[in-house]
Image 1 (cartoon, rainbow, N blue to C red):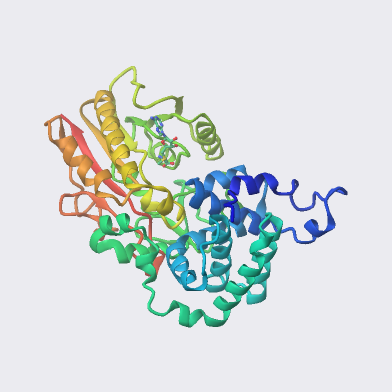
Image 2 (image 1 turned 90 degrees about the vertical axis):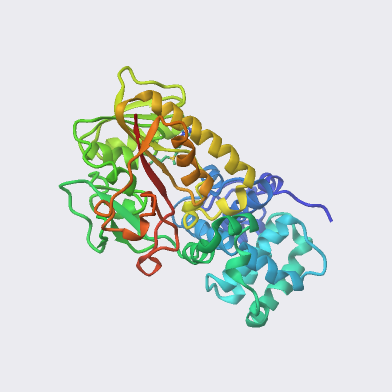
Length: 442
Ligand SMILES: C[S@@+](CC[C@H](N)C(=O)[O-])C[C@H]1O[C@@H](n2cnc3c(N)ncnc32)[C@H](O)[C@@H]1O
């Protein structure tokens, strides 16, 4: 049997989205159109076969609105439970099917076990998907296997340690004692967290958390909330809002935000009264940053360039370095990260983080502050980077105090770092994993 890659499948897919029916399309294809499963399939195949990020496939798709949201939800549920569902399928497969067929089966199992799709629809949509994507020889197999999953779900699940199976081994061991709790957190869909612009009111229906973030149930659409167009708030996970809060009073200070887009932290700095230079390397992301600030009616100097090379004309009071990282802290929103990242990526990223810290040193006045943040759970990108930076005596650690972290005391480590993970405060909706440290240039 040949392995049919998802990119080839994508090319063989009939052109045109829903509502763009052309007379030339065979009736049998249009009858089974299903943009939701098509996009979810492309996402999952992209991750599993090509290590392509979920967002990349989403951005390339012409699927919009509710279909896009439903496809995202299905793909995310499949990626969250990929390991345990793969194990569950093993005894039902006499021979290993091509990877793309396995991806289709996994979408089917996710619909049955995790999304409460009615069984006939869960099976039928996957059989149709295989026909549409040139994989008809496997339609019978999918029908039989998925029906067995419907009938025998409880027996098939017996003895499986889902949490252990749904995390690649290298990550599980790197997370140590936190691993099971992190996994419990990442099974949950993340709520919508908003940072409210000072002087504006939060839309109704939110819960104000002790840190000041206002939280709405998962699935809430920010763009549909009153006040969005007027720029009264922006989306920002409660943990992601902490680095700027931990910079203290920034009023009147000249601050560089080194990896700035989409601009949540830039906006916080501006609202705090700082004079901000926002440096962002990727042009489209810098454009998004500009649009986000325009909606919020805030103004920063935006530099499209490499923060490793850019230097300010005068030395700065503070640098916020939200360094490029593995993003393992954002697994609730980006479960693809689990299956895309490899151990060697962490080594490469850590080396890059050291270079960013060195660059920040050259931008700061003596006594200036570096706020180092990563949305990573990995020690190599957090405490180990700070330990490395402190080795040559150019920096001094400025530990976060109990008072500064009174709203989130569990996030304060012995060393005075800020550290969260998705297993913290699960009952209240959890939070992203972040590591934050404050250094002072000597
Ligand atoms: C974690 S995101 C930043 C999120 C942002 N701080 C916020 O709160 O909205 C990292 C950003 O760094 C940018 N980036 C990566 N390498 C860079 C570099 N060498 N110079 C400037 N920006 C860079 C990426 O394009 C990406 O937009």
